[in-house]
Amino acid sequence: MPEISRFFGIVIRMYFDDHLPPHFHAEYGEYKAVVEIQSLMVIGGYFPPRALGLVVEWATLHRDELLEVWDRAVKLQPLPKIPPLT
Image (cartoon, rainbow, N blue to C red; front, side):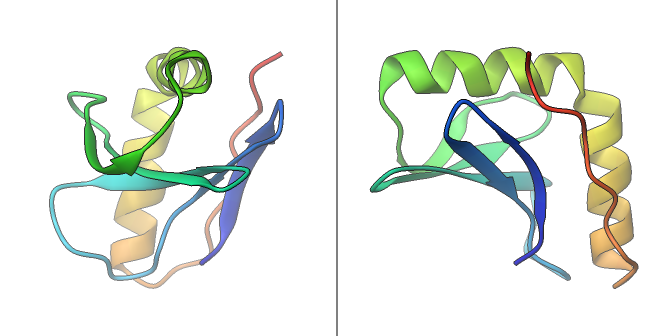
């Protein structure tokens, strides 16, 4: 699963040709969560509240880019990196 961003110990990934709805995977230590791009709701797994806040902040800033990366992943095209939260 390609890594598309990394910040504050959080890794953001996307699978190629994954199931709907459009989403990304976040990892932080032993925690893993699946986050739906449109609503930014966790649809699988668990993330500590503070780390989830950082993920939501980052995803809010990059929602359009995330949807573009999702479209590329569905088409099995190379996935670009998205800038980290700073």
